[in-house]
Length: 320
Image (cartoon, rainbow, N blue to C red; front, side):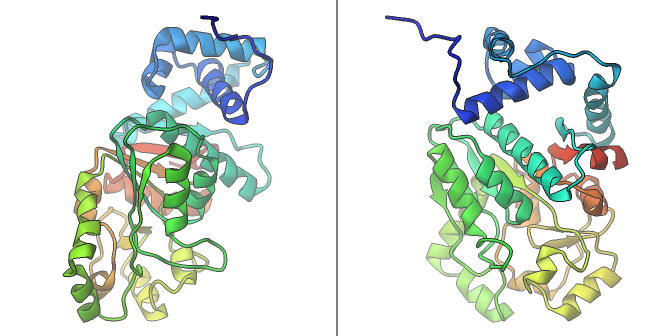
């Protein structure tokens, strides 16, 4: 049988992106070949071959500068400081446009998630602008017996697609079974919410949260233009009340203070989403966020130890 031509001059876009990211980990972040192999779940010889291909195809142009290894040191410092398993930092300090920086972080998060997905995983997906961007960047790679689940009920916004859209997109790109949550994120009354939770088909959907092995999520801040506020997920009175009580972050529909502690309220009895104790029990939890405005929200999430992996931009990394 003829061996595949590893020196082929043209790559599919997803392959070229993968080679570029591996080259960046090796040449810029200073990770060893063994560390890269462990991170993306391949053998060391495979990593060596990827690096060789990146050089041969001109995907990487080697220019050694002293500042090139800054990301690696910063990543390790953040891992130690916040007890994280891994931190991915997108170099965005030269990005003038915040939207462009966010897209770069979302793409890095998509690639990082894809690298970590394994056979038989059950992946939970949250909702928001960052996750929607990341879902569009997920490489097309089939993962055997993968299940993808929606963590928060359906919400709509003029700026975003419905909550289930990101879950469906990730499932389609990975060849996974898709389990959406066919319920509104917030019900009008506690009684109605409880009635729905008692329905067998709803219980079956909520039961899937106990089987999660990984979650892919972002976190909302408490600014006036926060998506949680703009979508009307909470009333203006509730929004102001939580801010007055010291809320700093919105995680899967729940408000956290600066210490990462849940600020309870009647609102949660109307919320159809994963419980925080279930969320925290998931072995791998990847948080994707970008921009100075997210600093307090990310800090609160880390204080509550809700993340094991972090994907952020360089500016936010330095602030943390």
